[in-house]
Image (cartoon, rainbow, N blue to C red; front, side):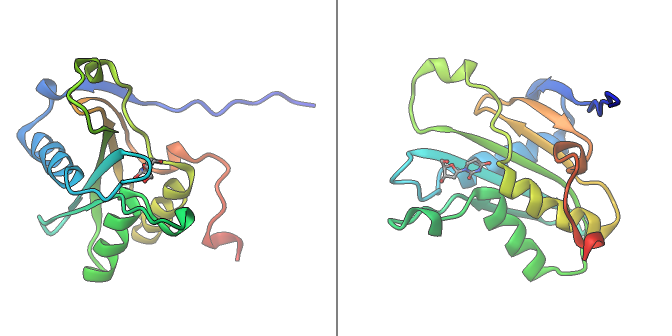
Amino acid sequence: MKELSQPIKYQSFDIQSLPESEKLLFEKAKITREKAYAPYSKFYVGCAIQLDNGEIIMGNNQENAAYPSGTCAERTAVFYANSRYPSIRIESIWIVGGPMSSDEHLQDFPPVPPCGACRQVLLEYEQLQEKPIQVFFSNLYGNGILVSSVQDLLPFSFGASYL
Ligand code: THU
């Protein structure tokens, strides 16, 4: 047997160190998070997607009394983006999440990463557009992590090339 490894590169940041365009994406993700429908988990997530036509698409998590019928912020946003603009590329995506609380400990809340199902869905669009999508994810204070492609978040992924 051979031991192999597949390390990933990522950057950690705080919002102050980012350019205005990325600060704006963070603000949009935070604004849309406020409108999430999350009465069951009370965990609110917002997602903003920067398209290469300059537009920003937003989405939040939408829960349901039949729990698995709900969906995450990332999928709400990316499905809308691709249904509205099927041939426009995605440059970057920002995910921000946390409980709805004024608790100051939220400052230490970890960056909220996309779940496994959302990674799979985002990867499909990354492969379709043949260009990496930058993924920013953070807490409500803008402390976060940047990876330069969805692929980095999903090693050994299954995709269209297998079919
Ligand atoms: N959630 C997201 O919207 N995105 C993620 O990446 C993680 C989880 C939502 C789903 C559910 O409404 C709530 O957060 C708790 O899991």
